[in-house]
Length: 124
Image (cartoon, helix red, strand yellow):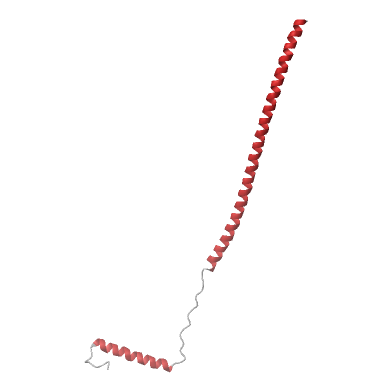
């Protein structure tokens, strides 16, 4: 039928293709031992990247803990220094006030001794 001249060229090609398909089906039914090729299984290829990210996360957590510990130690040292300076200032203020009182007492005592000296010298 595909060779009949009365059919248009498109129809002849369609008939030939259809007949060819029927022939392929007959050949396929004759060879039952034919099996389709087995597809390769998908292999996960990002394992090294995942392991790298896990390792980096572990390193980050360790580094973060270390930095927090260093910050706490630094903060504690700062607080201790501030406390020491505050105590030192309070002690200095206390020393200044006590020495000012002592100076005033010695100045008064010196004035008294000078007046006694002048009166003793005058009596002599």
